[in-house]
Length: 334
Ligand code: BJW
Ligand code: ZN
Image 1 (cartoon, rainbow, N blue to C red):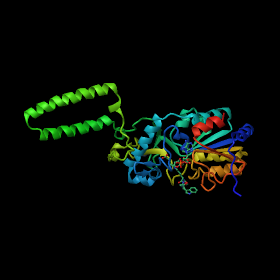
Image 2: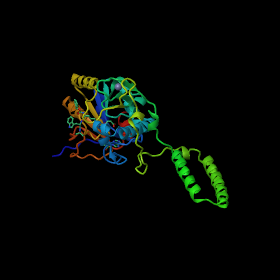
Image 3: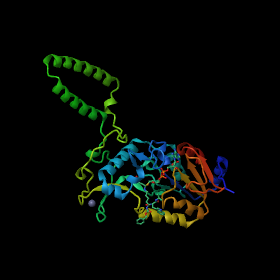
């Protein structure tokens, strides 16, 4: 017999009231409602690249400018995004219950911006806003929210493209349009078009200030030399985002703190929020919590299937809440 998890909110609310030690494992699905894409499934492609292929030291070694453009874009998007009600619900529960910790795989800074108590938030995969040196022996790091981090990584505006196009058009016109008469006519027309454009601009001032969507593959991303990428002030090596790529160890002190917390006493509840729980060691915390007696509640947009790998298989004393974490969390954690 396949055990099916509970789906009713009443039994969850009753259990939550009795809980002291709670741990949440969160993933990209928590920030989806804030407009940030997830890694796997729809939205997991950046241009033609699988996001998980770019999140490797090998990708950075081979193409530091491509990987920096990916991360610079992600920094920009994260700064533009706002925390959603899911981030706030977790932060609020943390303030109410000091025995509640959140293990976040997200690097977007949205939980921090929702005033999540820092001591109860453990960043398993680092942060887009921590910058560190690529040189193993150079220990340079800094927190950095500047956008763009270097001028070469600025996202171009539509107007800059138009200027180039305009320049090209002008050159073409000068080459083909030799007669004075024609030139006069052209000047008149240009004036007219210019006036129309001006009017249009006044109506919709921001139009030419809009950024190019560099994740659209029709935009040709430039090659950027290493000298123009972020440089280490100490050793002049390349800097990189302080995130954890595949094959790299998670931050040691974070792992130690989390292990100590997990091992110290029984756990009452494990929340698995907006994560495919396919990446280790993060996903392993679900089993560890279960081993410590925790009942598990999964909140995910995708329907439950006992076969897929997300914290499965759930037991008939666990819960599965299908839907958007930004809607479900405020409701079930209130
Ligand atoms: C919604 C929603 C909505 C959508 N509401 N839900 C066995 C044991 C240990 C390790 C391994 C192992 N087998 C293989 C490994 C190695 C590897 C690994 O786990 N690979 C697996 C793929 C098999 N692990 C590692 O390499 C880790 N390091 C390591 O093990 O080091 C060992 C070591 C020790 C000593 C010396 C040297 C090495 C490191 C893993 C680092 C992962 N890094 C990334 C990139 C971070 C930077 C960046 O952001 O770019 O982390 S990869 C990517 O995946 C990112 C994420 O944090 C992580 C998890 O993804 P997440 O958050 O689950 O997103 P999705 O897209 O997968 O899922 C979203 C979910 O949300 C979906 O389920 C949707 O349905 C749902 N959803 N909208 C609710 N509105
Ligand atoms: Zn350095």
